[in-house]
Length: 335
Image (cartoon, rainbow, N blue to C red; front, side):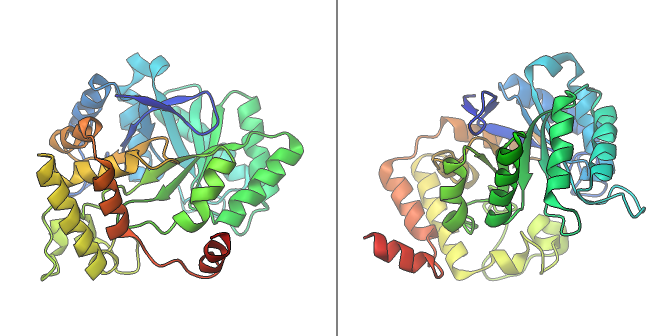
């Protein structure tokens, strides 16, 4: 396992981060605590140090499972979690108010069994709370030693820049990491964030790198899967990673191209998809969400895959998308 700087900070994280969204969830998609422990141990044995969690995962159970499993290695791993979404039924049990952020962090620290969160992400924009209030709360948590770094997820580009401007103006901690959906089948963030993140020293931590299982080989272009066949099949149509968003002609062409390159390298499609992401200049660490130890073992194989320049050019071309205005005009003027 190799390590990269998380944005323009001195914090080093492994190229693959362990996603924990399914840890403690009930049903077929969930990972039981004993299985999660096995996955965590395999990840640590492979040299991984980056744990991606959110307080809403399994209603806090994911934080408890990870916290219990990493007590003996706490001083050599990076624990991240997030705050924004509801953690109760009360009017102040969600959002990015100072009240909720402080309460959420205290609860996460208890569940994780630690004194400090290494990276705390704002998990989404809160239209009700003044941004200066949210950022001030983060600054105080860093000053108190309860949070070491701060990150952002699912903000628009202008919202990220506004936050950075406020933080810079007050000498508060800046975002060092940004989590966004990014994969060969979802490259939507590139027009704005491909420039914004490196220019501001923010490391990209992609989630959904395998398109929600789209590269697993269990789906067919000709038939919509049953709900029990995985995340894509069971996700509502209006959500990200749903079947209607994935099952497009271009995405199926991407799957075919990825499969051909995988066959050439005696690899899997998942490994090729992850290998492509590892070459993207803004990526610090990729969040891989696994439900079984065999899934993790397959993902780890991407670290040994060396894609050629021709492979990468083919993947780039097949997964490219038409730029919207004003990016077309900007690019044309730059020629």
